[in-house]
Image (cartoon, rainbow over all chains, first blue to last red; front, top):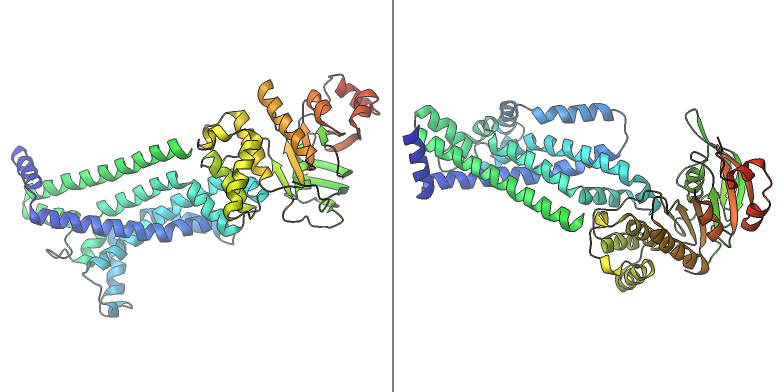
Length: 231
Length: 240
């Protein structure tokens, strides 16, 4: 293992172009998917958290259950939808990074929605009377709760990004792991391990860990600074 | 903050408010009219906070009726309330006030001048940029008061605004309440503190177990209470 680790570090510090192309694509796909999921999941979570409708409890249970969606299942559904004979086949997205973003968005949206719902619901219990007394309208209430819950929602974003960055099951199905086009860290790791190219696989693993730790540290720092200056 | 009687008098007619099997207010009839502060006193669970919330229009009676200036629905503006444990929004002191001013429809340059005015009224200029949740209890109460005043209310409801504050903080709050009242705002306040009631009230409403026991001018209440319950309460006995 010592030789493999040394080779991995060598690849990292010499700026191996193949390695960095893979890293760039991974970050782009996972961040895009997480941002899209935040745009969809945060309002969805707030809506479920603040409104009362028939079947709300079922919706909450479903949302929580979907946090554990199997990536290969999502990959398969996306594959069927995006394949030539599928309902979205005309878009021609299969085996492109866009298809990978779609699959990861589906995986991450329930995570962000479920955490947002809990955050907004808890905050609403605290704020309800105060906002009612101030005559704040429904849309503004949602915006207020999302803004005041922003530090907790950072955790939702992180959890979503962690899920997207670490998964391989869906993107290998809809992306196809095409070298130089749809190969990401996790799909490359799976491939290189199966080929016996352990140095590259380990190098990719180290980079993946560094990315996840960096994003977490950044978010934690932002949260600390925000709490200090905004309360 | 000129007085206007648009929501006054607030009339309670045979009001019952229940939550499940619990009776919060029972057959309560009273009038809250313009003038000196009305102070609600009584032990815990007497119904003081419920009466304030009902008068604010935040909860509806189970039976009976409330009218505001002869209308069955209160005007959307003109009233404000400070809760016993006010919730500070997660932003600075000035941010909380800016939010309240925006909610009250104050826009543009007016908002900036009103913000400065409100900070000055409650003496929070020095901590304007501090996170609201990091202020002391007394400062948070003053901020909540300023946030209520941002609505430019004609009627101001205060739910035990000096509970658990030290004498200095209590005096600061009482001075603000007095100044607001002198500017023509009708103050309706709940308190446990008989001394505070004596210092601030024009009229006293004594509640016990959701019922109005006694209602009269403050001098008469302390000098010549009508009911046995009032006499015992003034004497410091426990009303059980």
